[in-house]
Length: 211
View 1 (cartoon, helix red, strand yellow):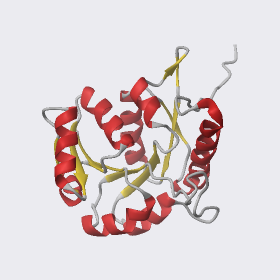
View 2 (cartoon, rainbow, N blue to C red; view 1 turned 45 degrees about the horizontal axis):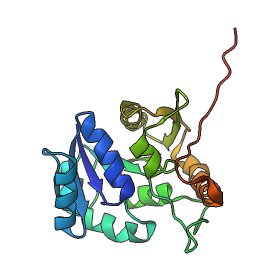
View 3 (cartoon, rainbow, N blue to C red; view 1 turned 90 degrees about the vertical axis):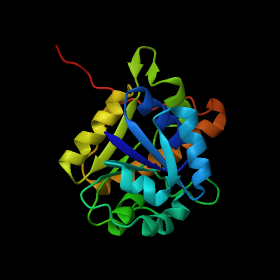
């Protein structure tokens, strides 16, 4: 499976590292291709780097891992990836980085789906920190939860496998519009982390097993 990763920040790096370790082929994209190439070399001999457009064209699955403010510009450059699964891990944070710039009647994921009408957008990885991805999903022998949502069942199955392949517990949250609830969860995470707990914390959905 080939994954095009649009972005070279901490989430892009840590997810790329984990997926490379499990055998996925990666192509990082950046506004500065050299930066993407350097990141690719640091992760795997088989990983590649170049422009956003090249990474989007390469991937069977595309990860969006850049700031919300750049979304429209970057996605316009890359065109409409027909039939591909697009993973959106972007949170539309406000200037204080602790609140959302919009919500309630839409979400970043839904706005991205409008920009990419021929793709299958799945919201995922937006409630997990780069530190947890780096240090591992296990907390006291329990895997932390990775929530995801989308409107295409096959695309969601692909994303669930990408989640479980790196040790997280995938939890299907339903339709893409439920990203309106996942994005505020990221704000909750950030506010808790900033109160002194730090970012090596994670959400866990517990289900009681009846006898």
